Length: 231
Image (cartoon, rainbow, N blue to C red):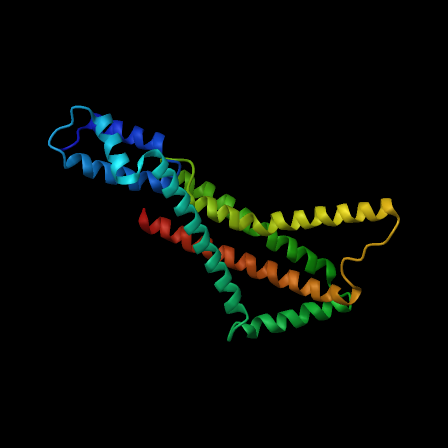
């Protein structure tokens, strides 16, 4: 039977109350409405909805498992794309850019040249992905009329990816501050890295931050294009 407006509104509200992510909402809603329309009559639409949810998704617990699985898979996919970007940067022909850049940063760090611009570039590379993603999500959120739930598997995964390096930087900074404080209290000197490794650390940090920022922005751009195409 064809669902009327009251049936449709009821199903929308039931599904909205059930799921946690925007992507799951449309999947469950489409499945439930198709199953309901296949029935001859609907004396109790809420019971019919509950039966379909239990039989086809395993009830509320099944929905939770489905969303947890989708979230893990999407994050794994995002991380795989980011790792692949790093691999391409050290393979031919990407190495033609990465290697000369690494040599240049190492030389500058070893001879104390342009250290402030290098540090500013590192900080910018950490902050830029977060800034672009935040502004981009705000703009697309205003124009996305298909968004029912505030949470999205894609948005959560991309936000986590954008803030990953920034969070770890502050954790390492806090650890360094704690170790420094303990060293001062206990009256001995802690050397985290030998001086000879400082240029290497500069170079590795610079390259990692730059490549990570480029990977995150590229993946985010692909996600934005997908949203526009779908819409």
